[in-house]
Amino acid sequence: FIGLSEVGPETIRRAAAVHPIADLQIEYSLISRGIESSILPTCRALGIGLTAYGVLSRGLISGPWQAGAQAGRGDFRASIPRFQGENLEKNLALVEEIKRIAHARGATVAQVAIAWALSRGDDIVPLIGARRRDRLAESLGALALTLDREELSALENLASSVSGARYAQAQMAHLDSEGR
Image: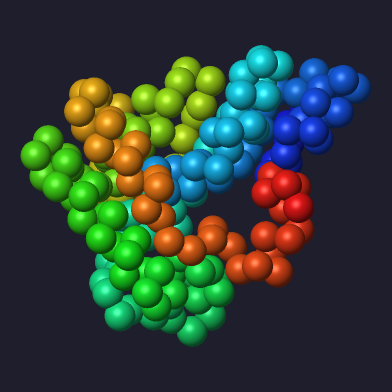
């Protein structure tokens, strides 16, 4: 089996013309939705599954982030625009909306984010990492959570309000999936 990572639709089509592609691993979350315009439709047209990483947006959605916070020394998120200054403050306001939905459902923010990813289609597998057993149990709890239309609609509306790129400009320039 052959899989690809972080490539755009043209690369996907070129690779699939040479050999069947089983899967594309790419960032996809409530606040990283760039694949929906061309990459996801290309994968679906070619029958390629998708492994979504970053479902919790590198801890932005489920982490202990607060307005005015900064990534610690050596933390790669310090270079990510979404985690910086005004961008972070705007994105934390989006997280508050997710918290509202989670609280109403008796779920955690992480469970809502994972349930949203699961709702996107049977061809998408959210890749979840956990450093502790309790976080793994929390993530698995998302399997029992089905979001209703109203909740999904509220979550869909968040994407247009995300502030800051998912990587620093120099890194974005090297991602085929970003069309550069």
